[in-house]
Amino acid sequence: MKNYLGEQIHSHREVLNMTQDQFGSKYSVSGPAIFKFEKGYVKPSLELWLKMAKDFDIPQRKAVLLWVKSKLPEEYQDFIDLTAEVAAEAGGKKGKAGPRDYSTYSDRDDMRAAVKKDAALPKGLRDLLADDELWAVYRPTGREINILRDTFGQLGKGTKAAYREALRLIREFTGLD
Image 1 (tube, one colour):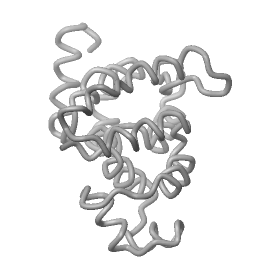
Image 2: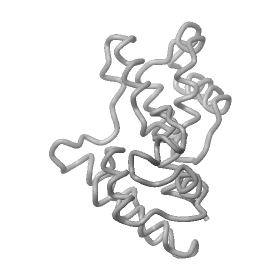
Image 3: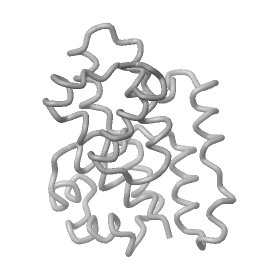
Image 4: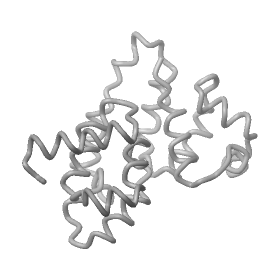
């Protein structure tokens, strides 16, 4: 069964560079409780999850849907489609423009700083984009980062090496070298 909440909690805790104990103290829970949430052994209460989701910049509606989806048996989880919710956020809500469009950055340093702060990026992609060698040798464009996130990020957990290979494929198929 997919651990939707645990992956979000783990991802955001890593971005903040906090231990489980430090992260738990922000929400008045123990480090072992955070461990159990991240591993999917236990789900946080809706009240606790909504506090976390707010800090993660996850809209309340999407947070509730994620929480409900995480509680369902695996065979029913596909009944809740979050792609429609993401599209609604991008299209109609004031103040929320959906995922960041890195192709709009003209300054590489600004783009790199924005990527570093973007907790919504998959962990493997964040690891790749934190690599100084990548920026010096491969010099990824904003468009390539968008493609990596939007196309390959949806496939699930990817490693730094897998995202590097995906970047190579994007360049081969699109001619973006």
